[in-house]
Image 1 (cartoon, one colour):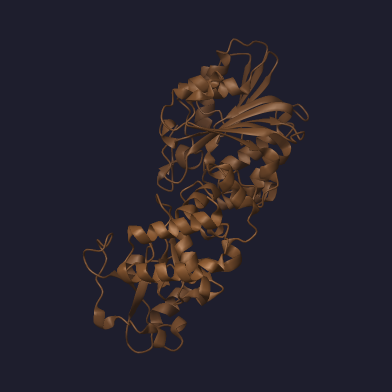
Image 2 (cartoon, rainbow, N blue to C red; image 1 turned 60 degrees about the vertical axis):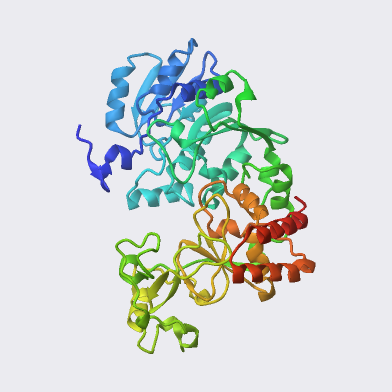
Amino acid sequence: MVDTLIQGKTRSRREFCSFYTESDPILTYMVNKLMLTDGDSVLEPCAGDGVFIEKILNSQKENFTIDAVDLNPKAVLGLKEKFNNKNVRVWQADTLLDFKTNLFDQDNYLYSKIIGNPPYGAWQNQEKKELLKQIYGGYVKETYTLFLRKCVDLLETNGRLVFIIPDTFLALHMHKDSREKILKDTKIEEILLIPSNFFPGVNFGYSNLCIISLIKSSENKENKIKIVNIKETIDSLYSLAGGDYSVADYLQIVSQDEILESEDLSFLIGGDTKIRELIRKTSLKLGDTADCVTGFYSGDNKKYIVARDLYVKGSKNYALVTLNDTEFNFLEEQNLLDGLQKGKKYVPFLKSANSAFTKETEWFLRWDKKTVEYYKKSKTSRFQNSKFYFRDGIGVPMIKSAHVHAVRLENRLFDQSVVGIFPREKKYLNYLLAFLNSDVCGQLIKVINHTANNSANYLKKLPIIIDDKFLPEIDEIVRQILIKDSDGINLDRINKIFNRIYGI
């Protein structure tokens, strides 16, 4: 069978997103968490090459059945050849769409155990996307959460499910509905966090993996969730499978009720009790005190953005600015949102914000009247949040680094990779700039969203404690930093002030 190409990748990678589980420590841990007993009815909803089934068949249990389902006809053929076993039934079907109650000629058929490695971000045509939206609602681009929700419905009461999936569902706003589903309909026993490179052939840049173990039950009051992190050695999963948690790099016990009662149903991974309490109980958030918005995108950066000189990082293949064509007094222009009117072509542009407090201008954006007209009409450019263009505020990079960085925008237009933060009261501009560069802010944002993304939606959730008596001191410190550039002594002063304000 020919593996056809979809969007430049093989069909099995784009449409089926088949990353097969070939790690014995992972398989051992997951099958152990399934707690198989004689008489179990087991579902593998995306069976792939059948490694879970092999592990289950070697578990010494008897008198059980396994339904192996896969969408990929090539995988189904391989499963039928591999398992000539009366206990295993192989089906070609789309678990998300075809799995009706009469699929196996039995009404209301439910399973006592479900195990799987569902597809991550499987490609779908528009027709299928619309159908999935009708069935599941909300965000359907990331398919693994749809498998999680569907398979919870396919579990019998007190049945067990064990999945290996990306950890993004634990915090990302788009997965709130999925979090609500499992928090209300199941008792989550354990969430094991592991690096994505533990999984052969997978190494995500934006997240890691987790193995979630849960029980179908609405009787989940006072349930405690064990959150375990293994960072270094995959063989530690053998010890965990045997109940030895001394090998864990991090172990946290979290109340399921506490998560369910929180504003965004986020699991708040990491951090100590004080940090989690600050996030949950501080009434004032950054989104209450400032507008947090995404910046501008030209649609073709190499055509419309130019670099200051050859030494600007990432400037290879970019044209260089001509200073005579650049308008530095752009704030004096009338109707600036319609473009430059006096013959100049470029304005200063903040393409990234990967420094603290201040960043010199390295990039310039084409902004003559004709080009701005194109930006507004083009389907590829994003002329978004324009009322915040050319205003003084704070820029925070959307991609996380080891420390949170924030810089003064200084009225420059800012890129979509930068979140613009505009305090509603100008007197708090330096206060919030200092806070966003503080160690306290770094601790808080890592727990609010543990993935690589620092988008506006997550920054809005930062707890803000305003203590006006520190305003003059913070203003003076920031003024010194902006004049002299950042230095260790002033950063230490800022950290001490915010540690005191936040009680850390």
